[in-house]
Length: 199
Ligand code: 5GP
Image (cartoon, rainbow, N blue to C red; front, side, top):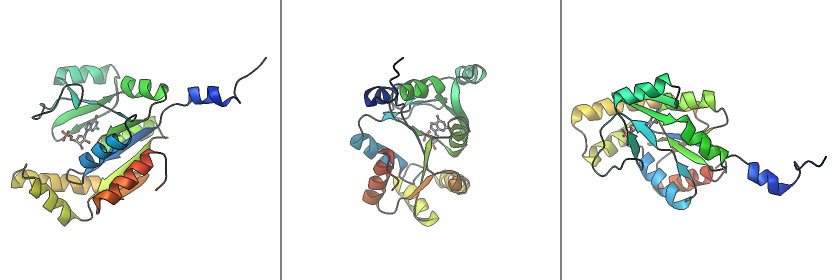
C-alpha cells in the first residue's frame, strides 16, 4: 500500500502552526512590538483572550478581548475551556483552548500576549511553545516610561513597578529574552523569532 509520508505536498498540508507566547511588565514596549509584528507578519494569528475587566476607550469586543462577566469566566474554568487562565491586576484573563488549537491544527502560527502565570501553564500544556520575555533595560527606565505615559497615579505606578519585579524574576522560564533598549533592534529580533529564527 502506498504511503504518502515522503511527499512534501502532503507534509506541508499536515504542518501544524507554531505557538508563540510573549510576556512583559507594563511599560516594557510589548504592545508596540506586537503591533509591529502584526504589520510584518499579516498571517500570524493574534490570540484574543477573554477578560472580566471593563473595555478601555477604543477597545473592541472580539478584536482586543472578549469581555465577559465573572460568572461566565468561572463557567469556563469549570468546563475546562481555558488553555490557561490567571487573575491579573484584580481581573480574570484566559485563553480559549479551542481558539488556539483550531488555528494551530489549520497550520496557522498563533501569538499569545499573556502574563507569566499563563505562560507557565502554556508551557506545561504545550511544551513546544516558543516563549519570549520583553523587558526594559533597567527598572529606572521602566519607571520613567510608565510615568511618561501619564496614565497612572503614583500609587498605581508603584504597584506596576512591584509587579514588574515579580515578573522579571520569572524571565528564566522563557526561551528568549529581548531587552528593549533600541526599539528598531527589538522589533527586528522579535519579528525574526516569530519567523522561526533564533536571533
Ligand atoms: P491589560 O488589561 O492591560 O490588557 O492586560 C493586563 C495583563 O494581562 C497583561 O500582562 C497581559 O499580558 C495579561 N493578559 C492578557 N490576556 C491574558 C490571558 O488570556 N491570560 C493571561 N494569563 N494573561 C493575560
